[in-house]
Amino acid sequence: MPVIVALCVVVIIGAVAVLHLYWAFGGTTAKALSVPEVEGRRAFSPSKSGTFAVAVALLFAATIVAIAGHLIPSYLPVAPVRVLAFGLAITFAGRAIGDFRLVGLFKRVRGTGFAKLDTWIYAPLCLGLGVAIFFVAYNAT
Image 1 (cartoon, rainbow, N blue to C red):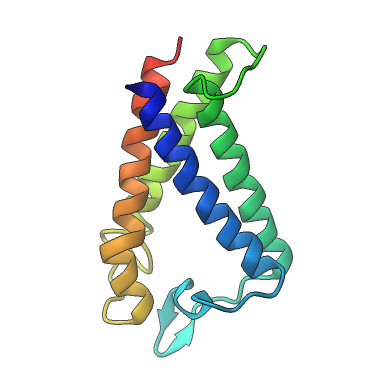
Image 2: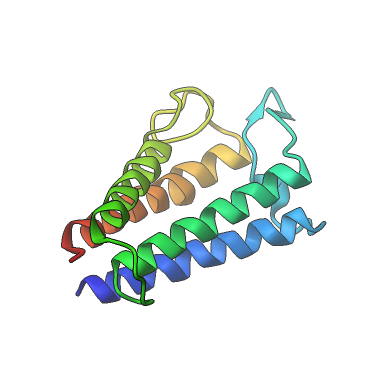
């Protein structure tokens, strides 16, 4: 079962990484709803290099989950891979909880396009990924 969960997590994180690569290289589809809004304006404008860095970090996360879930072979010791995977689980769960202002399940700014997607898609997805990664890390041997 951990292998199946790991595969699902890797596919989802990989898809999100590809979306960030698309944006980093100039793509615009769905980009307008990817950043929180305050008073009708974007809270910040991500740079291309920053978006690329997020994509690389997501690919790293997918790789760690793939190693922990035995989807790809690795000569790394199990202990550091598990620690990294648990760290990823905490990171994704933290994103789901949010900053109590603009993102996450407990955000105060609501009613914007981003906030609606964050409430119904982004935050629940991050929470689900956090739980799934925790499961994979816990069962890593």
